[in-house]
Image 1 (tube, rainbow, N blue to C red):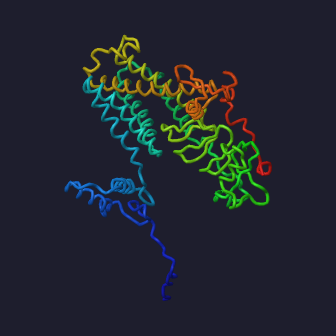
Image 2: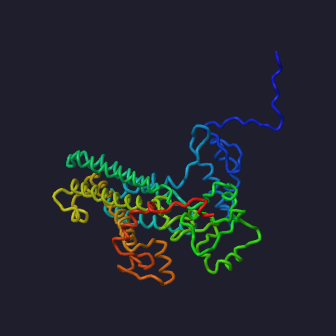
Length: 423
């Protein structure tokens, strides 16, 4: 028999990960069964807490990072990391709504507390400039849970017809399709000079050409003989530009087209940046603004239709608006109380989204983005309208009809410039 061939030194063949193994943040192989082992920071924190000693700086952040890294789910080819921000809506929302259905006072307290907690978490994450899936998870799970309660508690009472259930279901599906389109690329700007990939990978030495106009696609401007020099600094560029550095993004290091902006949460420049929406966990820009408006509109129509069907079932013989504020005997039955609590939760969410849609429609009518409106208010260069809900900068306003035509045709009339025409 031939002796087995020895593996060459220096080449270590690693075994594939099993369903419960993973590579931690330090690159070491670990197992889910050892998730509670080697927790020096947690042990030190507990010891100092028991002995009433102050905690060292940064220890809570390290514990949170360790917990986030070890919170995983067994999966093929290694355990999958789960974003913790997905869990609070899934766990807490049904619990709060079921508790609120026990008594009217509990419902008042919880329905007031929920928006306050959501706003507090929004300002907390907004201040840290971090991305989170909490709001997207809250929105999607709220839709699914409200639909589940509607099918389980309202439809069996026999007052809702099958055609109405189908219409509500179709509206929900169309809204989810529009939401998936809104989650697409909003129009991120990046280097598109495929002839030299090194320029795209290391763009810190690229010197833009300042001739008064930026490229429509935000491409880098370069000379054919070689783009850049290490001798030029950004301060020298500002002098050469003569005040034209407003189109230059120092973080992305590219020339931005008109109305583009840098999102500090995504860390990238976006064409015709409107704002960063936490409900879709993405920016709203030139490529997905239409889908964003469509998703909001479908959500409002579907939600209002579901609210009216539910109130007509549990508060028979009363008008929808009157039943929302006065529905005697609704808390005598737990099923009706849960449905009525969910109706009020949907009403609060729908009111907030309706306000967002109203602001968006006003901005479109005056051809201004949220980013441009904030800048105009900061610089006192805009005119407040409709009690401050809209701001007219006057820079791109071409009239109501033309503004809407431009919005409807967003992304379709952008001229495609070749690399040869740019360089």
